Image 1 (cartoon, helix red, strand yellow):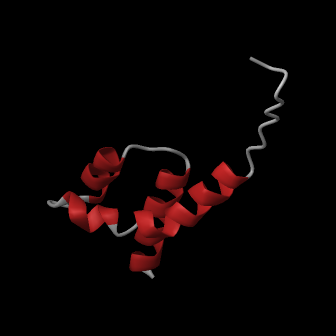
Image 2 (cartoon, rainbow, N blue to C red):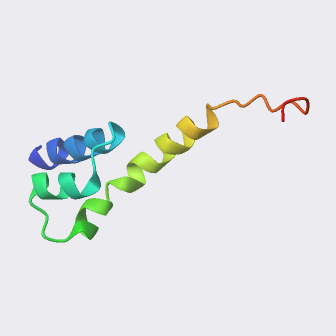
Length: 62
């Protein structure tokens, strides 16, 4: 149960844009690579956000 809370905390913080280094320190990780495990969960959400951006690039705009 405690592990689930920590996982949710890290994932939510990353989703909201908290710096990975800050999250690492908050979670007590001595190696930031341990915290980077949580970024794999957030990457698909970043891709969805990027895909949601629609640009109207008309040729008459210079």
